[in-house]
Length: 343
Image (tube, rainbow, N blue to C red; front, side, top):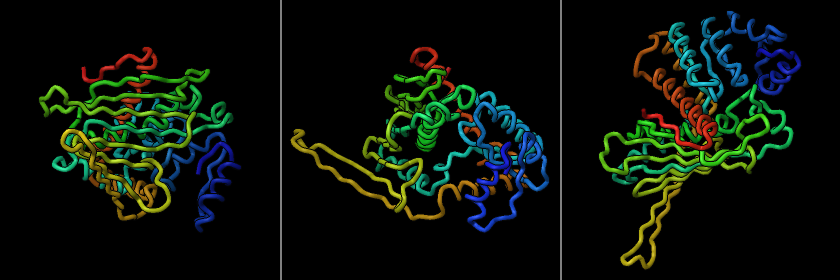
């Protein structure tokens, strides 16, 4: 554990590690704590949850010292910064992965497999999601996620990241691979100009479909001003799928719901069917993320970076997420204009 504050480092060790019987953890404290940790021979990989504006410096430093890196999202101040990080990871034969946990949840794979059944689900045309929580006055005034010198993307990068990432997984699974445009239709900025509430649109494009309406549209709301909501709806032409806890799963069964509804002849009444799908539970998504990170690190060490292999694909998706976040911030800057990404 590295921290400029020995007290904070020891508190973390006591709360999260000693309670699990792991007391032989090295503490690096002081003004040069991060530098000493990434140079230590005791360390093979690092987790970097620093403010976004500091990530490029410390991710590059860790990679240059031959450490694998799990970096918290948003991954960088810009997609250009992240591309530099990926290049450094490849040069040093080390893995760079973002910390989007739900991607590793076994439920996510079940959902993606279901929506790919076009005969049953139809073609995905809409994705509606929201991830919000209500920050108190201290959070809104002092948390790094609301400060321009900390996480400059605000709620768009912190919460909107999850909505965008799920939409990317969905769109790639069903063949809507191209990102056409983004737009922020409504937003609220704090005194520092950091978004604390935003309603956003991202349009994905089915290249293989020649119809006029060949788009898949993500509409999402992210906010630090509303109660906790983490719902997602994936809408096909035959069915819709709903998840009420897609980012942080609730305690208990891992579920998603399927809905279909048809009007009868002459539209006199509707017939609805709903199905609750209970996904077999396994390790928590945080555990699965670390397990997958370990697997990827070992793969890179043994075989290096290979184009179109899973480590490379995951890093490219992370970079694409950052491109979309950057474009949404540009839309706010332009007063809500469309930002084209397919030109």
